[in-house]
Amino acid sequence: MVALVDSHSHLDADAFDVDRAAVIERARRAGVTRQILPAVAASNWNALRDLCAAQAGLFPAYGLHPMYLAEHRVEHLDRLDELIRSERPCAVGECGLDFHVEGLDRDTQLRYFNRQLELAREHDLPVIVHARRAFDEVAACFRKLGPLRGVVHSFSGSEQQAEAFWKLGFSLGIGGPVTYSRAQRLRGIVARMPLEYLLLETDSPDQPLHGHQGQRNEPALLVEVLRAVAGLRGESEDQIASITSDNARRLFRLPPP
Image (tube, rainbow, N blue to C red; front, side):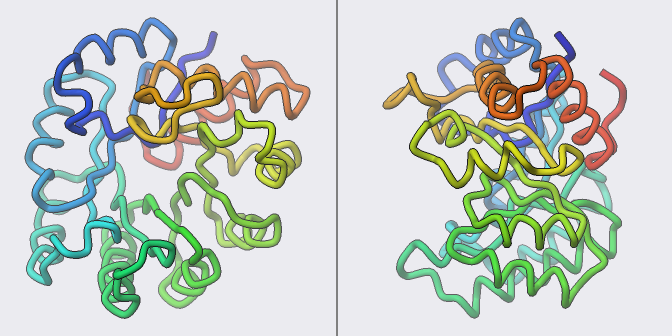
């Protein structure tokens, strides 16, 4: 099988502290040779950098996630700019807008998100975007601050919203939810969408796949996401693996595997 890229994995999360090396090895044996690891707050930037430096095939992205708004400080944006200049990560993120969780001030979210989009544009990097109940607002930010490129990870919007992102040059990250038969809208989008905008992801340790409910998710299970996508499209797993891996390589400017 073609080597796979997990375009969204939080391998640095505490849930992997007990067996992180084994998780990485299982992923490699399954064919997942490269992983993009997006940060969520300034407090984990250094640990994320060290993990990726110590293990081949792991690539860091640095950002400020909207769900961790209480931890963010304005000065973290300046630190992020400095870190991007010194480390040259593969992307800015995870950043975005979350209008689903109560108590996350929208204006404050927008300020952090817009500045991170500006940093991505200034440094010619893609953005890894979290969006919940905010797809139209995210697209509006892209239009206002573009030109930009990146991925809207764990996409769960409508076909019209998906098409809006493709027209803006953004990919969609597809993971565990597509393995559930009840996710009819998402499965329909994945079955018909242009393959050049598709990325595979696990969002480990979150979003367990069908058949793994209640369990910790991990990158080795990306092969099950691949299998589901190939089945929905009626195409071979090797073809989907090859195209989505090439998509990730181009977007994040990854070195050869």
